Image (cartoon, rainbow, N blue to C red; front, top):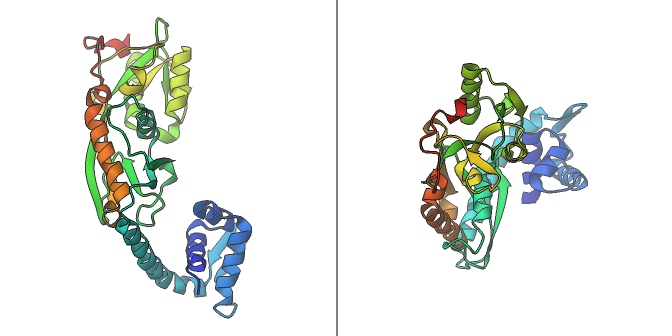
Length: 301
């Protein structure tokens, strides 16, 4: 029995189709189909999935195999993490799962202009947090997230806090708001903006799911909106209308599986992140020359 066949079986069980399993594993659909056929053949051709119009559903035989397959997965992944941790090499690719705000900050700070430098042999790979990468299954080596995990064998430490303020295009009469979509109405900035809309009666000019879309709309003068201070303060076309808003400040946590934390390249990235957040603390907090410290009512103008 080939471990890769087991891995494909579990991916299909979790994703519900060969195409989705292929995306999750980075494999083509023909490869997934071939692996599944090989796995079913090893059980004398027993059908492990019911083929339905909407996708694949575990059969009774397949359901019985899942716990054992997950036990194999746990053992193999533990071996893979510990093998990586045993390597003394300070080189290779370290994959970090992060949200748009945090990923943008890390990408910006790879510049040589920052005092804190990543070791030259390490390549950073940033993956959108919304893809829900699983650290236990090593879909990412580490994560930078808003909340620490509730459970799991993880090393967790607080990296820092991103302050947020309201911005508009410099000199523009932009009274309407730029905010998130209804699907993201639970986000703290979206809730805060909704309160401003209700209190002032100012309309919403744009709802968009991405901070980059917000930035472009605000830069163009479409309206005013909430941005991380490290983004807004550094943009020459934007002006800040409020001091940092405490209730929407975003804490971030470094999260790594304890097995993988011992890997030399992963330790180096952890140390780099810690030093980076310490070095850039004032930038992230919005403590810049000329900040609108007295403009607490600016958002409601």
